[in-house]
Length: 447
Image (tube, rainbow, N blue to C red; front, side, top):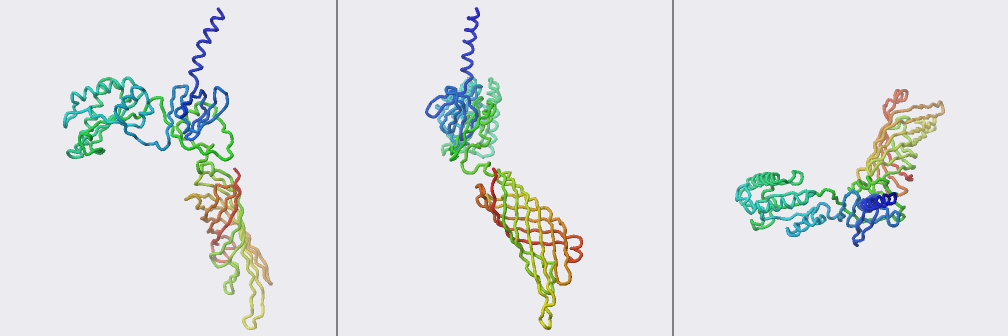
């Protein structure tokens, strides 16, 4: 008794295990029993149930994917996306009856026997007979959604022809619904004379049939697979739900690189470089009656940036600028030296710098932060310092070379302003120090 029960259980278990398998059909008509892990427009990952090994194949080498839950995926070249092909009605009807859905999706055909009485919305006798045949065909394939588009010839006014096809569409839809067709299975539209296909008016007056969707059937458009030169073995998603979601081909494939992928622009980088800047106002630490000394600075910068996408990165930047001047005051009569004046201005801005790439490598970066300003004045009679923190802001425009490489190079120009307050503003009569310059930097990417 126990043995009979075990045999009975085994006989029921085996078919269910067989039905629970996924299948892949290649372009060479080879069928692979497997568990599909993920499917993208370039690569399908699966576990081969015959070898129990993980494997992958380029999508374009496959014809169909069959999931155990009855989902069927047709593989088509990406060049066919959005393309609508015209086929003969005999081929359309044959494919419809045989369930050859690969030949039906995104294909249309014309019927000239679904006719109406001239200038009216009532079907002719032949039109009713052909409509009943189409209704029977639709009922045999309840998973197919069909669209009927009604066209007219170009006789008469275009507005009147469009209105006539709209009324015919409504009448034809009501006729099909009254004879047992589900409303979700059929869409009818009138187009008037907007899509003329021939000089023959008889060919322009037609009803076009198009399969718009099939329940349980999806499409995946395959693209050329170009692997990394040193590709790592792919990691497989754990759930079949992820595989189902991947069929839509909307998620990016991070394992492939057909050109530049979004992942090429996501990194952290550390940059160092040199700057040179010029004061845009007369140096406020020099006697303007005698001279302005050196108004160009030399310095450097360091920044840490997080690149969020191909368009945006955010960074923190610190820099160092120094302006120096040494003036020898001369006696107007004798020309001898009266006294010497030495001045040094050091400025250290600390700023938040978001970069917006308006083109592939050209960016605009507003800058906002604080600046430490230290002015040292030393002459033969006295010496003093002014040491303050100021609010600062600016903008930078630059170009990044080799942006997706390991070592990007940046060349930019910038404009910055430091607001001046307190003793400095009181003694020198200005409220801001503005300067502009150029910056050359070298970065290292940390992926």
